[in-house]
Image 1 (tube, one colour):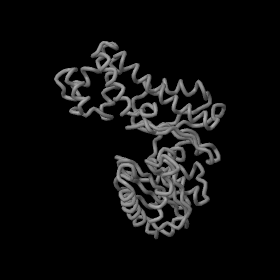
Image 2: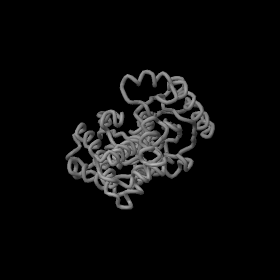
Image 3: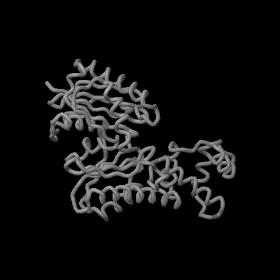
Image 4: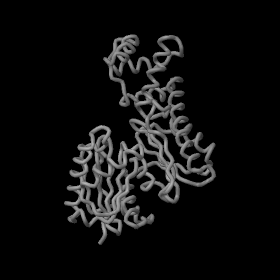
Length: 326
């Protein structure tokens, strides 16, 4: 029996799963953050080794039994990263073909009907990647957030909300219920104190405040509603950039949504989808349900020359037991 490995290395956790050639998941491991930008290459190696040991112990196989491995790595942003990442993975003792991609890409394997399309991420941050049908051409944005004008994950949404609250304070913009909500959230005495504390870093108002913005919008505050609409349009424009790079505009393909921001529902998704379908009317909307490591396993199968048919994908999903906190 041949076995295939998938690894999802994120900024908060690392998941590793092993499946056999029939699509049965036989081993799973979980460890800490594996993004080398946050934990360094030594931390990445430690996370991989811990997760791998758990997975192969559960699978009751040696690491040399793995016939193909796929790695989705947060922090794998540029070609120059590859040699350093490969040097870490080489220390795992794998003897099989290995594939490495940015951690946004495995969602296409896991959720896109045909294993290709566009993946749009909006969680703490935002990102967008795409792969064509041949898996030879990749489309992307920088993944560097507001520095490059790429919006909007939760961090960028809150960043913009604080600007709008400051506009209300200076009379540059309209009054908004976001001001009182953020004052209360931070524990500030008033709006002036909030803005002073924010600028001198006395108050930490980051991505965790994003649900508050959706709550204020749900109450009908025009500024909050427009802010979320803006975020949706910006996400759509990120997807459209990748669609143009890959010449997808006239094709039928899946756009896979990944991340907690999309829990905000129609206020965010409707303007995003309208923006995308103006360029690519045959695009199909898919919400990522399975954990990303499932896509990494499918990617690993491809490295080993095994293409996962829909029935196998379903079997992988049915047999992959991941803690609910993934």
